[in-house]
Amino acid sequence: MSVVEHIPTTTRGRLATVVAVAAAWAGLYWLNGQVWDRLLDDLLGLDPDARVTESLHFFLFDTVKIALLLTGIIFVITVARSYMSVERTRALLGGRREGVGNVMAAGLGVVTPFCSCSAVPAFIGFVAAGVPIGVTLSFLIASPLVNEVAIGLLLTMFGFEVTLAYVGAGVSVAIVAGWVLGRLGVERWVEPFVFETRLGGQLVDDTAALTFNQRLQMGAEEVASILRRIWPYLLVGIGLGAVIHGWAPEDLFTRYAGPGNPFAVLVAVLIGIPLYSNAAGIMPLVVALHDKGLPMGTLLAFMMAVVALSLPELILLRRVLRVPLLVTYVAVVAAGIVAVGYLFNLLLA
Image 1 (cartoon, rainbow, N blue to C red):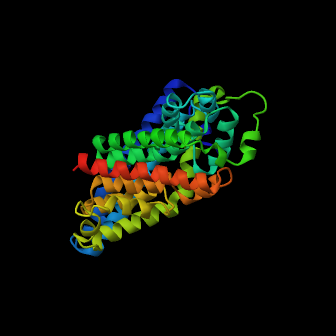
Image 2: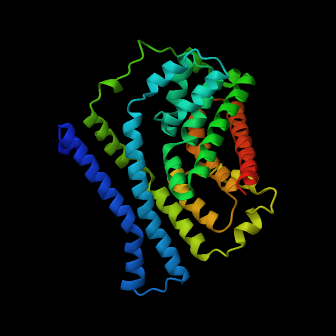
Image 3: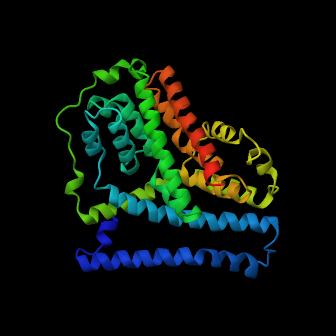
């Protein structure tokens, strides 16, 4: 039975349902820490200062916390994004020149539904609609790099300043990297069949015909779909964060990746590129490393490298990009992320 069947059809009924669900979500979020404190300290009698207890509390608390945050963030953003389709984005960017087009593409990439599995069809569709290669790449970089999950988690865990810095940096990297790649004339390294593809018929945008209940249904289905796909990475990320939080020596990471190491940001990016995770899976590790004293610029660079240069997306893009362009793409984006990391270590120190 779908979620829509349980939603009242009247405006007042829908409003009451949304308020009730939001109140239940807020109550669970507020009770989360208290439940685990009582269970571990009072009922099980564990020493709250023991490393095992600290790690266990971190794992349980963050698992529930991030699951609740993801549920709320994904649902709200999916309903909002149901008014903005990929087809409409492609129509907006079609025929745009570089420069302005890169800025528009990066901005639209933040709010448009996109995932690594749609990298190839999105690339082909944009090029077939007349979008320049550099502008298309700005969109492909911005969409996974500055995503709503990362924004929501950063906002709740690190505050407005860090979140704004992340969004500004991610959009800037997408704009500059796309523009640079466009200036390099990389069209010669795109597989020929991409340019031979033609769009048949008119662009169809069926999102305008959706009812509000159907948009709510989309939100619920997207929550279930994303959580089902990412839960292994989420648990691994939280588990690593719990181990680091409870067992790693206080000065271990600051000694090798702290402000005293001039190569810390570069090393963080090189480590992050081959990793496959997402913002939800990597955020607990970022929190644990931040608690151990790593600079925020280094952590943001690490997170950006993981989410923007994921191995599965690069493998998929190889179908449309030849090796020289794929290597150039990774090098330009990685260079931008490294620059952002060093800059933020200076600004957020």
